[in-house]
Image (cartoon, rainbow, N blue to C red):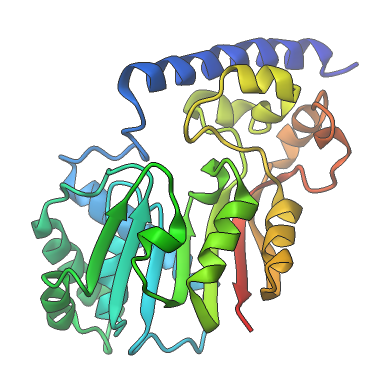
Length: 291
């Protein structure tokens, strides 16, 4: 009863945000995967280095990228991660997406990104080697199709490392995506996926991070658009990978709801979310290995 009035208000505001997101997609499509403007060169470099550092934190400490082939799912507006993986010795990088957001990226961005990476990463960085590989489509690939058929977009390639950042929560069918990436994973392939589980609309996510979980499926589906958060939880992702035979699958939380917000954030959720024990988790990373 304590949070009833507050959460009714947040539910009403949240519906407004769902409607705005639906309307924006109808008018403009999916065009802004993050809040950093293309003209903000320094901001884009800082953002990309932060994303790459987050991915590396969840990879095995002894993972040697030399001679490895890397696949990134849904890289958004930049293939900067690919440039950095190549600088660490990867043989090739291939990115696939349902939306062509990175196709017109300025190649000069990779030069600036590699310079900054080399400054802060110490020995073992081959920035010049990465620059040479970026000019070769076979070593720095990119394929886009709205069907997001992973094996077809992989173009016959197989991979030793498969990663994504803030992508899996947007897939309509997590099991289908996992089945697709499994088909292109070599034996021993490592995988790491940073997953954002909370409400995505910026104003309300700070005040009611579990807002998208307040609505029954029938209501939430009224505002459906490509890329709408799928409301899957950590156990769903782990289960999808384990069902495809991946080993050592785990979801490591990165952030949880701050204590002052936990009470209202856990109250008034729709079924089945109201009974889940992990609803304080905001984001984290799933990792596993293909045996």
